[in-house]
Amino acid sequence: MNRDWKEQYKRAIDGFDGDWAKAHAILHQARRILFIGNGGSAAIASHMAVDFSKHGRVPALAMNDPVSLTCVANDYGYEEVFAQQLQWHSNALDVLVALSSSGCSPNICRAVEIFKPMNMQASVITLSGFDADNPLRKLGNVNFWVDSMDYGIVECTHQAILHSMVQP
Image (cartoon, rainbow, N blue to C red):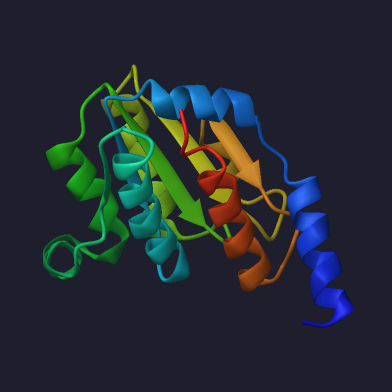
């Protein structure tokens, strides 16, 4: 890893914007945590669902089962793959964690928009990067934004932020 990458990671970790203590409290008071993400963010969602269930002692699920995703995409359209599942499976005591490096993924933003009014007591934690003014960053109760345009930097920082919150 060259110095430029080291500096980018250091800047991302030192400079992310978000209320860590508030997010930690929300996650550990949840009945259940629901994670959503596409691509690399889906991998982070799966990993964090297991870690929160196993080590954080909070039941958690990643809503990225391939059969569910392809069924919903086929029947309702890809923009609805998470929103529809949240309508079927979530309740007011759940917390939604929405990950999107760009903060512009239509299916992620749509899911948050559906989840919030459906679950008035529920909280949404977003993790995004790229543009500071991305749509996802405006939707959560707590929003973590990483100041980088690099997928690797953003995704690794998102995972580090979430990992740091696993322990009660």
